[in-house]
Image (spheres, rainbow, N blue to C red):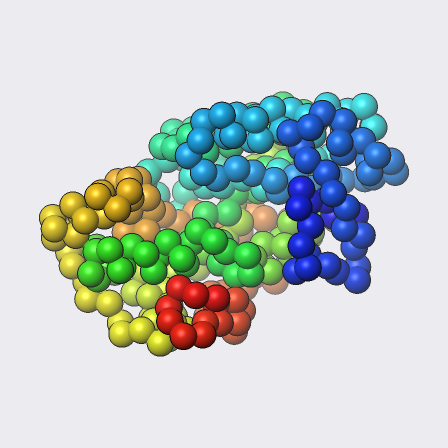
Length: 280
């Protein structure tokens, strides 16, 4: 059973029944929880509205937990984000090595949601940057950043933890099928971090763009990005090291570790464009 607030055609799957529910509405999940072994909670608000962040990430997660408790579902897996750690640099960070230092409204509310899940004895999966089908933030954000700055801030040497949406699904499903890991958090990423320069090569190839010029610490680019609404934290996430140890989740999920280079086909097909970069 797969639940979505607004089911759309791309969610249709012959292996799942698609139904409508809204975690911000108390009781809306209850009809679907009978005889359920595991709930994978992947509904999150990632915008900047504090009211929506609280309603969906905090109250909504509380609703999920309460309805699972009432239905006798003991196991809940929550898909969160490494952004609960805040700005880096982070290099090879283990799940046990960092506390909560969120730098945005959305990340702060997702940190609260994590604590609710872990308090219930659930499990938390933290990807860093996710590409693939349905991406409206990561790669579109890279394109906008380059357009506004007139190139790429920094020198392209930063290393990032990435994962494709399909690989993330395999890891989460593998975890759901593995023995329960009560109260544990896991990083979800390809084990090898990806250099920004390599990521940008892939983006340029897919969108038919010229490889961007590296701007270093050009203050004009920084001013342009701030004027366009980019926060310092958002820029830091893709220009400073943000990579995390993920071996535990690959091992526990029973999945063979994958690589970004092996996922370039998924990367390309997810962002097929016509006419101009940024349109899919």
